[in-house]
Structure formats: C-alpha cells, structure tokens
Amino acid sequence: MTFWYGQVLNRIRSIIILLFGFIIITTSSSCTKVGTAIGAGARAGLAIAEERSVRTVISDAALKLSVNKGLLENSFENLFWTIKTTVFEGRVLLTGAVKTKQLRDQANEVVWAVDGVREVLNELQVVRDKSVADSVRDKMIAVSLHSKIVGDKEITGINYKIVTYNRTIYLIGVAQTQEELDRVITHARSIRYVRHLVNYVLLEQDERRTQ
Image (cartoon, rainbow, N blue to C red):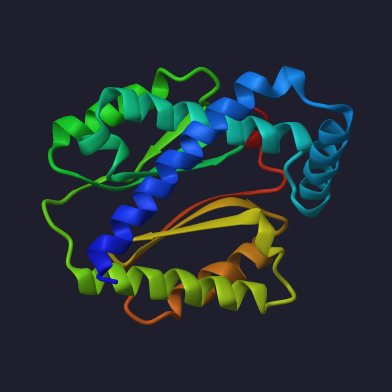
C-alpha cells in the first residue's frame, strides 16, 4: 500500500465516522435502556481517568463533530480534507495545511461560527506540498512521544492530546502540576527530527479552564 493510498483511506474512514456520528446523535433519543446504561458506564470511565468531567468529554466529542461538519460543508477539498481538528474543553486546535492564507482565515471563521467553541487555536500552515518523508517522520514523532509519556509513571498521559505536522509537535490538554508538564515538554524535545514544539496545555487549576 502506497503512502498516498493510505492517506486516502484514512480520510474516507474519517468521513464514515463523521456520518456515523450524525446518525448516532439524531437517533440517540430512541436508545434502549441497556444501550444507555452501557454508554453512561463508558463515559463515566473516561471521566474517572481524565481531568475532564463526563459532561465535558461528551461536549467535546459533539463539538468536534460540529466543527468537522462545518468544514465539510464549506469545502471538502480545501478545508475538511486537509485540516485536523482536536478539541479539548471547548478549545479547538486546527493543524495541517491549506493552500492560501485566505483559506486559513476562512477555516478560522467557520470554527468560530460553531456554537460552543470557546477558543480557536489556528496552527494551520500555508503549504503547497508536503513530502512523504516528513509525513512518515510525523507518525514516528507522535508514536515516540506517546510511548515516552505512557512509560513515565509521573505523567497522567490520558490528559494530553498529541498532534504532529511538518515535524512540529502540538500539545493540548491539562497538566496536574507544572512539574508534570515540564516532564512532557522534556520528552517532546528529546525526540529526533522535531523542529518545533507548540504547547497549549493548561494547568489543572488554571482559571481559563472555567471561563
């Protein structure tokens, strides 16, 4: 399987998941008692593991769905296809590439128009082409950092989301302490091929989390 073919399959899977999400949301009122109980149990498990509440986890998932829907409706090829959205506590991180600055600004407007968005972190790069080598390195960087975080007992890894693009690491989430965040940053900077590190992680007691 070529890299390009793999990328196409990944985007197709994203579209299927998006459509499936719409079906789930629109039919949620007719869920059985058993299905509701299982769903509630799974969400409760997430809340116990994460610093986010059950309600916030669900809200972020719905918000991501709405943001992707907005990008898809505006432009499949120029926005939805090339942009990755990461949502944490209502903060929307946009990563990936667009062809022009106008498209970058357009993506910003689309996301801000979605109800529930608290902040837009627009890290879209204006890039015409991206080499296969850099794409492979991005995968390696993400896997390496994930492994380091999971292997560090001083870090609650589930509270962090890692995104890589063009050899840049983007971090978003919540850190229980500054010391924990420092450990994550140290791990990120130790990985080979990394050009830049962009940190959007907030501390657990940061007042911006409740604004």
